[in-house]
Image (cartoon, rainbow, N blue to C red; front, side, top):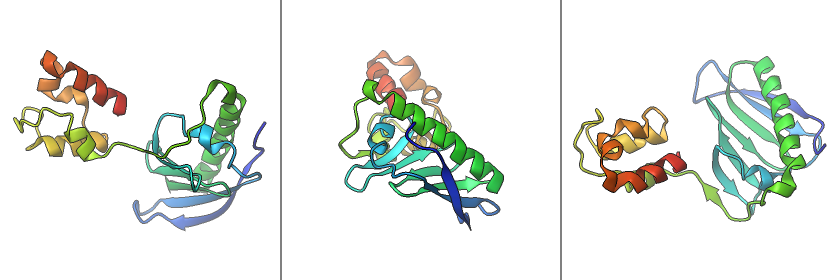
Length: 171
């Protein structure tokens, strides 16, 4: 076992989502050794190996890990925050137990942004997806309000099959 607990140390109002809170937790042990392995998991938005900071997207909000603290955004209440921290301890321990099967990440990582996505779209601005432009569709893909399959050109045109597969892997 790598980690025993992450103690909830503070809550703050969440400015991004009024009525929700930010939960700050302190692990009983530094996360410096496990963060590079956690960076191999899906859902990583950003990873900086120099500062050992790692951010994941949660179903709502974000989870950011530092060696000595954890931030959770858009949490409903303290009870939910404590549960997420408990679940995080289990995930950290499971990752640590399987580290021999993983390759620790040593390079910076970031999630694709809307321009990365846009470059892979047909860029015809045909509006068949319901958006005015392919760039607007790309923003929807990044925000997870749209699906790759909503682009008829990507769906049907075999010339875009490789781009479609790339987009699905990225997202």
